View (cartoon, helix red, strand yellow):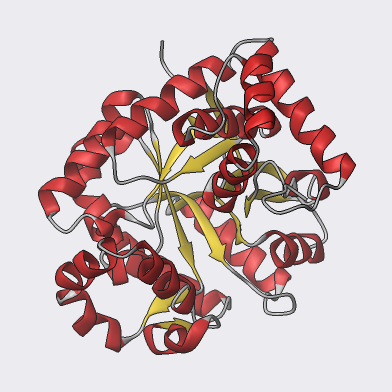
Length: 342
């Protein structure tokens, strides 16, 4: 059964409800591995691919472009503007294979490096690796031209302002340029992408709903419930991230609790893959008319995510209802004991 599709933005961009985020694509050290992962997503039915100039130390757009060349008309490409790699990244990018192999061997070191270089305003190395170019029409045009060259295409489906801070977007000027680009056919729809609070604030400052808002969300954040008036369509990311560790830790911290949840769900949420499936299904229900992004470097997890998406298409799901009720009950209780959800 093919993945369900939705229409995003004023341009009516049709895409699958499940999208592959390419932020971690270069955790795979060899080009053949990266292309194989993208191919696996396509074969599984995923047609939405999310990238940015800063991903893969500046190389992810080109990698996605090579994959997309033979199937451009059948996939949706979302990329971003406002942040670009600095010249320092070019030297580092050439050596990122060995560096990433070291990081893969140490999950703790990998998480630390990720938090220290997540963007121009984050961590000691963020400003060395990435530059916040801003969101002026001239800068946005240069960003788009660079992305089109890197992707090897003459248009992008979604063009998203990347992590704008409140007050950094001159809405009328930017809005005018993006509409002109859409009329010219170099983009099909535009929007804002980033962390929930600042992104929602920027979207609301424009004075009318933005076509697409892409924000972090999970079963604990519930970001979309604060963003309904900010956009016409939504994409969410980060549905696993901290949520899966928080959930698995909570369930496994108490044997009696784990047995009780297992009996109610007929599934063991202490197992990460089962927890991930339920979290994904919950995210798809929360954002039922939009897209949910997930990221992985393992092909088998792509097929697991697609299976979860197919399950979420059912009009009713007793197991998912029970899971959501359990989460809500625990949060209402405000349990803050060791390993707690609150």
